[in-house]
Length: 122
Image (cartoon, rainbow, N blue to C red; front, top):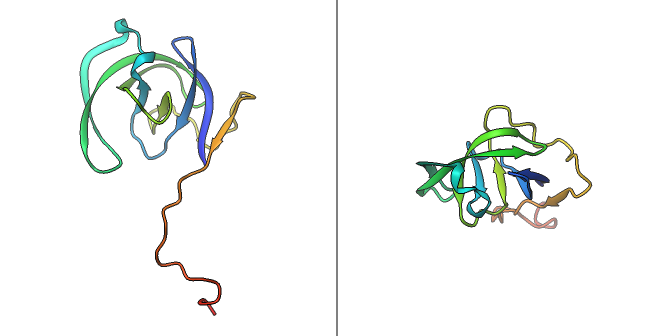
């Protein structure tokens, strides 16, 4: 299960995903105030192995996984409003969300072509 909780970025309520496969934080671009942009970009390797540069911003997060001022990559259409990767002080993704609006999204299972039916196994 992908750990999804409710949180806040710059006083706006958002969905927050804890992603243990990431080494950075990501926020949806339209949640970032112009004054929070750093004017720099950061190179990011995507899940398909391609590299892309994204603008960065310093945002104020208040989430069960991480709170405080954080530098984040700004993406126009991430899978969730805020994504918390393996960054310093990020909390365990298995914690219970401190909100009654907890959402759990099942992981997408990759088909395994080596599987055999129960009959073939015997």
